[in-house]
Length: 197
Image (cartoon, rainbow, N blue to C red; front, side):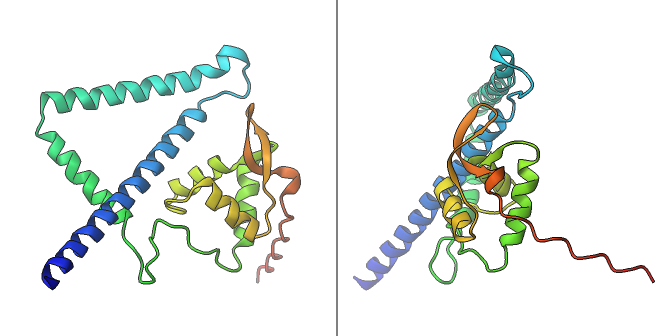
């Protein structure tokens, strides 16, 4: 009986890890693709011309999805390879750390990282009025940070670091949660360069 319970618990935890990893990977991909489509919008154009970029990117995604479907339909055994790849990726994304927290969950904000966050925000904002949290999150995830985070997780982290978040920041005709340029904390002055010997 104990062996059966242990085997059931092992299967249950493996299934939970695959489920957690699958949802993390799917959420990451959807966020990255949505951000990629959104970046196609041109700020220098108005009306339907500004929307041509995202529409073309959506058409490219649809064509890629159709191509994958057609190849898998012609060669059904490829579905086994795709399934194996997905399981491997989901398994890695769903692993837990030693303290029992999923590695996909956001880690607590490390101390002393406020300067780096402010620097990154200033770079992303550039000459625009601000940056949306979704764009910031996509930027971080493309670089391997914040895996499995949601916008709410990022917002809580920024507030923990003392970076104000507004409910409605308008960037490229879209309004969403973000950091406005006016609210960006001042960056500490760079250390003076040492004189050359």
